[in-house]
Length: 283
Length: 296
Image (cartoon, rainbow over all chains, first blue to last red; front, side, top):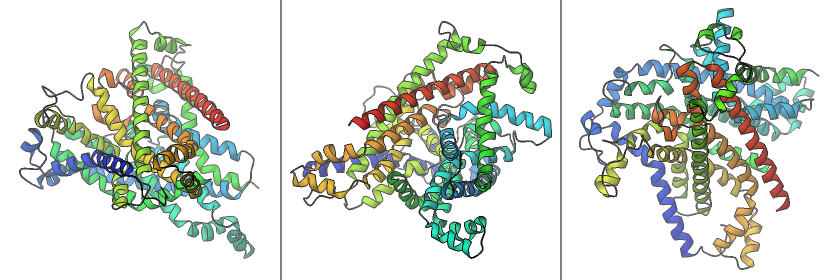
């Protein structure tokens, strides 16, 4: 509280207790993940121990052999970066239209696109599955079970938020800049490419990372729309527990490794995300 | 003059293909007797009229009974999980607003649950909830001796609380982030004026902070509600293909009803009912909260 007086003891003690408890709650799984990933198999099948009795890195080596983790990893990388790239491209042009033009149906467009966010995935999972199968039968383009099908599905998941956020970003760039470019003989698309995009680079990076993270964490569509060769990490991690033994140490090691790309992305994103949300809240 | 439409076209095309057309198709097949036999040529499945709806809402027959049970479970799960997520997030944001030593570190730590991929963190929770080798039974039974014997967390009655715990763990950082952003928009002068009037920190929170957060809370609670109600990933990763009765939330229920029996007609009917329910709740919620805000 921006208060000239020092806060009272009751406030300080409440703060200490509540924040400590929440910190423990937040990091507990991370601690379990890290410590268990360094234990030999006997030590994760018996009673849980806070401090590992023995430390080994073999789970990090064995995890690649127990299930085809490398293949899942590559699949996830291909699907998620393609989805993120396309999503950003599509969101950029759409956001430019929303930010710079007045046209009939603008409000309806924004409402419809944003409202698709509130519908449960299960709602379009069944029909989308059938549509993909039919498109495959009719045209020979395999969307069901392919990476392409997953890419076009995932890119729509991040579109609404990306358009909304980029439109806000573009709004903050003075129109005078693109008008000046147009006076110099640029068309609207050149103005977008040469002036608006460079000026809103942080926003575009944020949206790309957001789209990548959204795709990386998706489970529902991945569980239905992939087969053995196209399976992504989101579904592949379950394979460790369908064997006779549950390799908990390897599961924890794999969970940690698959988290690295998104945690790294999130750390980059964090600063922008807070400012982005603040901008949205002010509007 | 067509340029703005051209710029919107790709976004619109994909939204249509992945969201809007499937939604229409979903309504269409909810009136079809679409079973395994017709999967390859689903357009030609015979009409069922309202048959699928009749089966799914008949609470005297097993299918309708199970759906009603799942609906009740989902509602109680959502109310509890959203309430706790909101409470934790708001408390943390308000308490961590002031400058103090370690604030930056704490803020970063609070966002970890949000930064990890859901399936990786939920699988870790599943490990913590294990009967023989989990952390929770070790602490509650071996160390603190609170329970007389180890508890099955992922089976039976307790599965409901396991699901609530993981959902809250996953969602409260979002509430924290949003409320934190909201707090930055409250003008300093409001606090200063309250302080001059002799209000202490607690009165300022009650008199200035909470009323100023009302607009943000309206959206935050709605978003949390929709996410939690529709959450598929958490229960799916936590329980696998067979969710226990007490954690059989609606998205898992429809998923299993559709892909175990391949009766897509009934599955779609359930989905349409779910959509109608969500639209109704959202509409009523927005009307009530906006009304209250105008008269506050």
